[in-house]
Amino acid sequence: MRKIKSSIFCLTISFLFTFGIKIIAMESDAYNLCQSCHGKDLSGNEVLGSPSIAGMEEWYLLRQISNFKDGIRGTHDKDLMGLTMRLSVMNLNDKQKRSLSSKISLMKSKKLEQSIQGDLVTGEFVFQHCISCHGEFAEGDATISAPKLTGQNDWYIYRQLINFQKGIRGQHPEDLYGRQMMEMAEMFNEEMFRDVTAYISQIDQAPSEDR
Ligand code: HEC
Ligand code: HEC
Image (cartoon, rainbow, N blue to C red; front, side, top):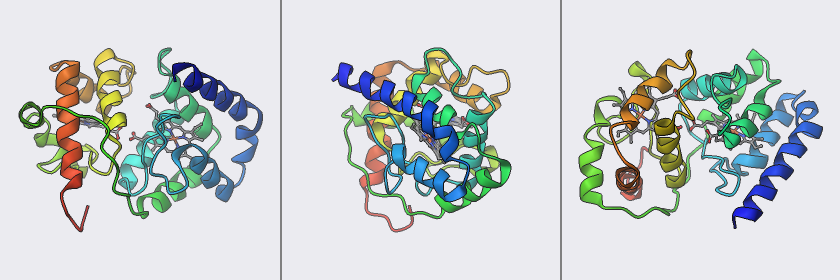
């Protein structure tokens, strides 16, 4: 599986180098390019490590696209997934970034499958440390720039927590919001990440209309 993953990864990189940069000259093409990794309905693709982005907050989308483009995210030498993303948005101009963020934020996020199991009691305990920023139901808080965590693939949440802990994400001097998360992630271990991820993804399974 590892081998298959890394060859798909190499293919993606060479595809981007040859075609990607040219393709995103036009806006509708840029959107198609997003779909090629994030999935047709933008709900993510685990093999490519691409998260669900459908229905994300517009301000968070815009910030992350800009972070990747400006090298604030996706430049750590162990962040190969981030690098593929960075190469994909490198040539977007401000207008394209804004209109893509607006369009994607209006899409509906899909109910996603749970793939990570964990101890929900420990998960709930760890989650108490997240509420002050991400909200009681992980719904996010725009006033402090913390995104919602619901509507996201559990494998992606887990991987980001590890990335923050290892400084693969959040270490850039200009990544002020990422730094906050890096400091948070230092308080826990990988098992606790698993537990809190399982806890967050079961919030998603609860029946709710307005997620
Ligand atoms: C070559 C594959 C690829 C393409 C094409 C691509 N992405 Fe990504 N994207 C990724 C990967 C992989 C990640 C996760 C990076 C990481 O692990 O930090 C990502 C992450 C993101 C994030 C961050 C999400 C978060 O939760 O922080 C946003 C936003 C995003 N992509 C938007 C876009 C948009 C908009 C486009 C189209 C212009 C696009 N992507 C095209 C692979 C891709
Ligand atoms: C001090 C405020 C704060 C606390 C506490 C906090 N976070 Fe965050 N978190 C943030 C901010 C701000 C971001 C956005 C980082 C960025 O812009 O890259 C973030 C991003 C994240 C991301 C990445 C989301 C994505 O789509 O890529 C995950 C996952 C996450 N937090 C999980 C947690 C968990 C789990 C906890 C509790 C253990 C927690 N956070 C506690 C502020 C916080």
